[in-house]
Amino acid sequence: MSVRRLDANQPASFSLTADNLKWARALVKKYPGDRKASAVIPLLWRVQEQSDGWVSEPALRYVADFLGMPYIRVYEIATFYTMFNLSPVGKHHVQLCGTTPCWLRGADDIKAVCRKVIGDQNTVTPDGLFSWIEVECLGACVNAPMVQIEKDYYEDLTAENFEQILMDLKAGKNVKPGPQIARHSSDPEGGPLTLIDPEIYVGKSTPVAEPTASAPPTAAPTTTVPPKPAPAAPPKAAPAAKQPAPSAAKSAPGGTKPGGLEAPRDGRADNLRKISGVGPKIEGLLHELGVFHFDQITGWSEENIEWVDGFLKFKGRIGRENWIEQAKVLAAGGETEFSSRSSKKGSGK
Figure 1: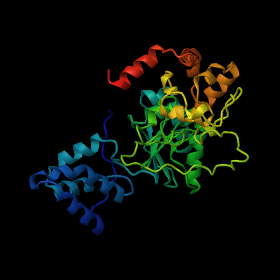
Figure 2: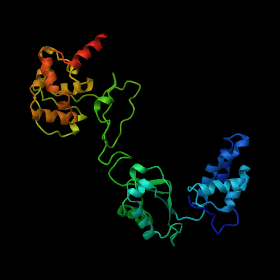
Figure 3: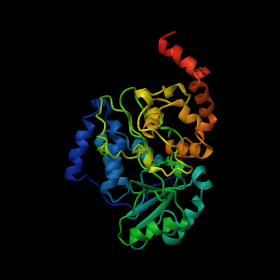
Figure 4: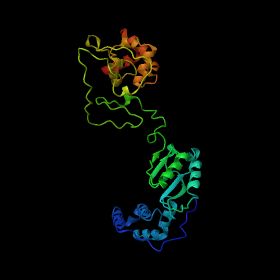
């Protein structure tokens, strides 16, 4: 770390405002009487907020006296942590991460914009709006390159979108913090790639909504939540074709949708969970397609498999797990290795 020194120009004195003094006294009471120094960092932060973004030498002495600390101890803390600015800064102070991940992803381009729009490091623009400094890792490596302005992170920066952010701030416009590209938080740029199988979000008794790219999954509730009411059934005199489940209907699978039945033959459906890869949730979705029996699956064409793969968002799982071959064995009254294991497990053997 480079040497950090106090500014050459210092005010004559410093004192907390009445509200901040009240806050500071309450803060100190959180610690044992001989441990008041534990409050030094939050107190310095409040001092910096009161002082337009920097900490002066009189302010450091004020904090030391308030906490009963030697001056040198407070100086050491303020000069060590780059979160404390030791010279005046602009209204919008840019902390630019130059650590390896950000550098590899284009931090040098962001620095060039800072020099172009603001000037040299540790200088304030004549209008008092901007200043900037290069700092070490700010902990948002996955969305590099990035900067911190005040308390907000601006991520996935390019020279173009970063310069636009500065121009908008200069014009007094609101700017959107966080990723500057079409991603949610720290998701992959194309949306989630893992944990997207709907089966993993299904509890033993309570269904849980599938995750989406814009709204990651949350933990399953501990109490049973009543399911949403199903759409009203069409008149029995003119039954409509089966509709896909609400969650899956959002997709537009290719291929050809397989034909389905209105109900199981003789009122009894085959146990489709004997097929490896079919759990309670998937079995329910197959039933909504009108698929109740093994022999229906055996008759699927390549186009049908493609459609069902897309409908279930399986990405080739039907072929990988050989649903057709499994269904043929089960339709003939046999058992596959998987169905045999499942039967033993269900019987407690």
